[in-house]
Image (cartoon, rainbow, N blue to C red; front, side, top):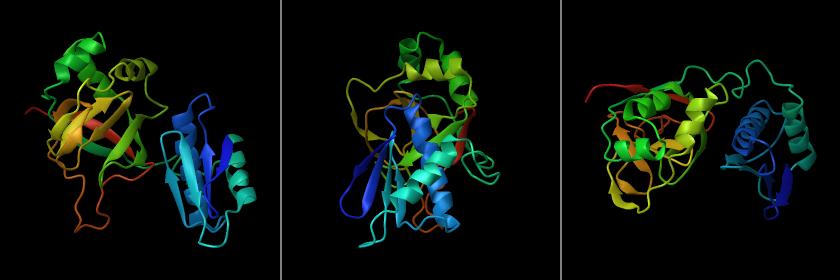
Amino acid sequence: MREHPAGDDALLLDFSGHDDPASAAAHAATALRRAADDGRLIVADVVAGAETVLVEALPGTGVNELGVRRVVHDLAAGHRRADDPASNSGDPVVIATAYDGPDLAAAASIACCSVDDLIRAHTAVLWRVQFMGFAPGFGYLIPDGSSEISDIELLAQVGRRGQSRPAVPSGSVAAAAGYSAVYPRESPGGWHLLGRTTRRMWDSSAVPPAILSTGSTVRFEQVRA
């Protein structure tokens, strides 16, 4: 892990040199949030990225770098609490999906498998929200470490589309470069569209407004259109 100052009151933790950067960043972010919740670490926010974690201190206080290092060190040493979401994230969010997307056949061809095999892999993997971004309610999902390596490797072959779409329909279930996601509203997008769900991912009148949050797990369940 490398540390980079981010202004006067933030610290960027870079896990790009780790054997599994995405997993290391996700677990570190969860552990740091837990430490903040139980008072072991005073921070304003912990923001996870693909391979980084931004730790923000309260304005004018500076980041407790020693405290941050202690939390990450304990995690690396295997000192996880039984109630730590990194090891126990509860029941996954189930997203019922009709696999009839316009890119389904193309994605299967890229992965050198049948459409049925692609659907089987996508529904077999337990997905974890690595970070939130792009649009309100949009979670970047990565395969959880408990998933079968063969399924993860198959899905990782499906990259981005050669050309983005100016408008992807709300509820589209998509995959690209080892990630999966559900578009919470109509927006541009360059991922392969595998299917669609009627589940509402973002509701500004709800508490919380997003059904996903960093660290939560997701399973896609096939339903007939």
